[in-house]
Length: 407
Ligand SMILES: *Cc1c(COP(=O)(O)O)cnc(C)c1O
Image (cartoon, rainbow, N blue to C red; front, side):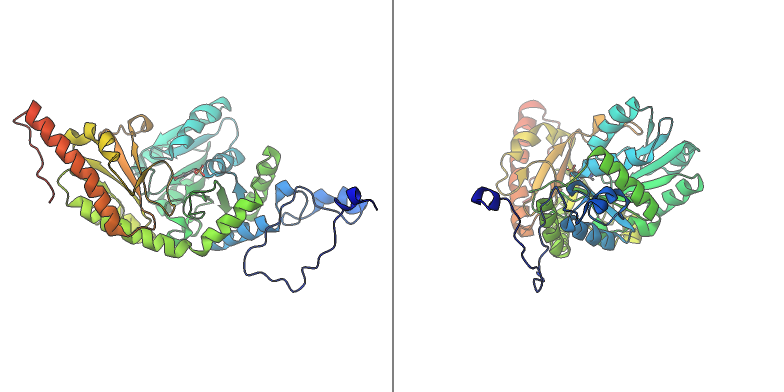
């Protein structure tokens, strides 16, 4: 055998006795078959057998199984992003002529998908007020194939009564899909509350380090799982095993990271509530928040992500003041080790119930830093807003109520 041939032939290496503490990384497009007959009958293999890299390696199986266990489901499928997990879940169950109900506070790009691809496919989307069960019930009819829920809602944090929605939807023969990214299965298990599909944006808490994109779809019914697996395969949706290893590593510390950021977020939320410039703090764990009772009833914990708004006179001063932050970065996404803040304009993203609150909302994702350091950073930000509000106030309107400095 020449060296150039030797370079590409596989050498047998035993894995006997190699029981790694970590998740083994298997990279592969191709699986070798022992003989022609087994290759020719490969599509008769079971859903967990190995056919081709796109349909999963042992590394994928590990992550799928781990998430299935955490969600309490029958089967998990992986998608290249949380957004892909949502769109594939929807595409996998709806047909032309069907209706899909989507909450008004849904993750923004899902609205975009509904307004483009679903429209093009002749699938009707109705956006509903996430907190109005009666309005939702009126929209449920036999051709409603799927009710999507996301609790709490993106940015505005509305809590949904998932068990009640499941009862109503199932009574009309509709499936229920839940975006559970905020809670993660450690704090809420939608399948145990009757949902048929649960999606996690693994890019957030699971990955946990802002360095990957992935999503998961977990289902309660094995047949639905097999059907969706076939859909993802036909669409060519696959994920990198390298990223699966990173998500699996993230899961090792998921519980402690969630607990740390949730505790920090609550401390910061309570501090914000006391600051005169703050109009509202939108966080399900706060007793005064509208969805607090639902959160207490159904969830076993919170996450480190919440939103807040400032009084109208402060609004114009927010963008330059955000630049004063030293520790908290300005950016989208959340659930990583480093704290993030994002100013979000939700007005154009609400159609069922017009948004009448603040012009834009600040969403904060609390990372692994000490909460006191983050409070000091936010105090720096509010200090700049305060300074600009009062100099504006003096210059423009003497009768304008200017909030007192916090300290
Ligand atoms: C970020 C996010 C998604 C999408 O996840 P990507 O992996 O970034 O596509 C979906 N739902 C919610 C609630 C999110 O916050």
